[in-house]
Length: 299
Image (tube, rainbow, N blue to C red):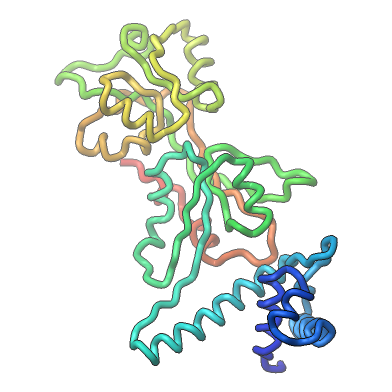
């Protein structure tokens, strides 16, 4: 196999950054035809088209995005070599870019990424938003995957992989009960203030159906979409909360809160959503291969 021509790779990197052949040629002080020929030679050697034309500009193909990631790493390594020889210190890291729903449990996210946290060669980029905006960023390779408690359906337009990686029962959780006292479900729900997820949540839908079936009318004092806020209300108000135990993991451990019991047939599912790509980030594959009992251990 012929050795990689790093001058051609640099030209590719410059064009990818500019997304325009003419502008890149001007910045590099070479002719447009020469630059185009160098890119074509690199594509021929790699056996992949790296660019597709879109209007007057150029966009990276999937192979182009992968090549760009490698090019960034190669030139970053070159800069690090210079820094090491000049200053005697440097670092080299692999990156994993994850998006998560803004309402998703922070404890779940921490459980999932925990194996990567101790690795000095890994850089994690964690960003939150709505499922719609995160999905758009996934398609343009701005994210490697999305963490979600809502599934995404694959169709001709949405070519994604949506893998359920964990499931946890939804429980009734509240202040510690006096010794010997227990929570009588569902009767006691009618006598206590209750905090529940908002109407758009699948947990809320399931809870409402369960209450209807059991002819229970809980005293709902708050509807909250954000699990971090649910955690605060459960901890600080004395109200009963309907939520997965992972949300209040620390409070259950230090006995600030108590799990009264799991609600029958009610679960929260957790997903990793990724785009269908020929080349997946190895760090993502590492996370997706973890057993569910490691992500959400049953304590």
